[in-house]
Image (cartoon, rainbow, N blue to C red):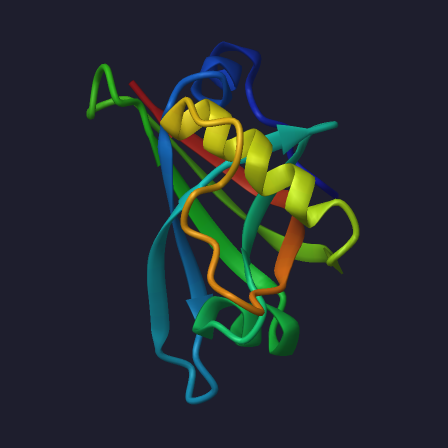
Length: 132
């Protein structure tokens, strides 16, 4: 049964709090990447470019974990373990621009590379723990 994000931690998704996304490499070793993080309908949303290691890992194995640390108090954090339940290019360009506004105060994502295809990953929380 899915777990919910505690109400008193929802503010982390309004702040410029980064997530540390852990995915699994083909040989089972963990791979961790800092990511911009969003929350939609109780599910976490991250955005990346097609072909990157985290993209390949999440397509192959949907099990992930994300730690979100409060930028105002690093002893306050949220850890979410769950599964990627949706991988889509639909709306991904608009989503990365939304994240650029939140994290960089820019209307458009400024780091796009020629030919880059953006992808949204929707993560269903299965286990949520918190501290602080």
